[in-house]
Length: 420
Image (cartoon, rainbow, N blue to C red; front, side):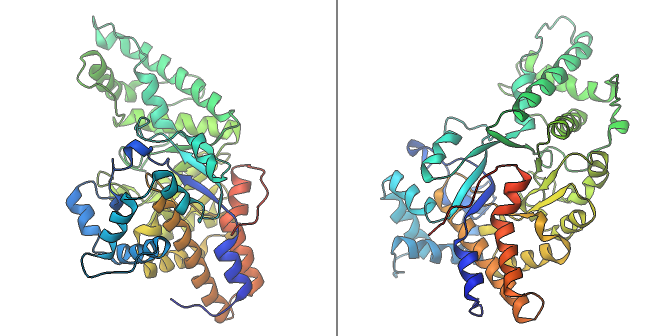
């Protein structure tokens, strides 16, 4: 899509330093082929689904953009996407990472490293080699899973242990999250309860969570399933997706976050196939947002396809912020512009944050940065042409979305550095 030549807006959109407020680590060199490049353009878990993704407009566009960087001219022997994959496989891994990461214009990355695959990926500090002031995002469910296995394994009478286990577990969880919140290398918490049942999280009162004493009745059944898995050795690891216990974990995280002034990111909208899509709209979180007015909620991924729901929440609740990542490059170019328009329909421009949701492959960071910058340019240029914005106002929106809003929300205290 071509935009009128608003030179100041174009220069700002395409080169202003950015804070990537939500991403994941890159694969280690020896595991560079652990997951296919198609994961950059699709959330499908099956290879057949990922191959279908290569026939989308999003993939056709991504192939053109990656090929341009790699100097590939489309030939007749295979698709352009396949040529990109073949070319990247011949490159030294450090060269591949530098080729794409240094073109993003990213000054700081907030990395969610709680994917449960630490052996495959680089440490979050490793990413600082690209000139990024990298910090961590702590997944509260993963923190909880690391603690649940430390509970008692006396199998003489499981039920008699439950109350003791519950009290000990939540005490440890609160302490652990409180310590993380005070760590200067931690920028935010994150919850993936959207994957573990949905965003229809019940209020504290409905879960039996009191201010001074805890009524554990509702959490006992789900905790029994978890403890049974550990004691009976049914699973080597625990994936907490057991009803009330997951809701309690979120409440504990929100309590700590409000106390320590640290934002909590929530996965919303599109995701892996196991997500309950009908419960992935942040509209389900309205009562939760009202219950924690001192906690900042960051709704990830533009809540797509529930973007308007997210925009509304941002417009009426001061503690709600909207991230518009992952849709780059998962969604077609026209779809991305539509999403940006929906974000701007109601959401205050001081409450929108950009991210790549980059993961595994450096190409995902590059595509996320390039396409987001282009979408902002195109949409804001339309508004200027329609007389609904001045170019100066549009430039301010870009600078806030790419840098200043995240800098404020996460209290990073950094100064934008010139980017090429």
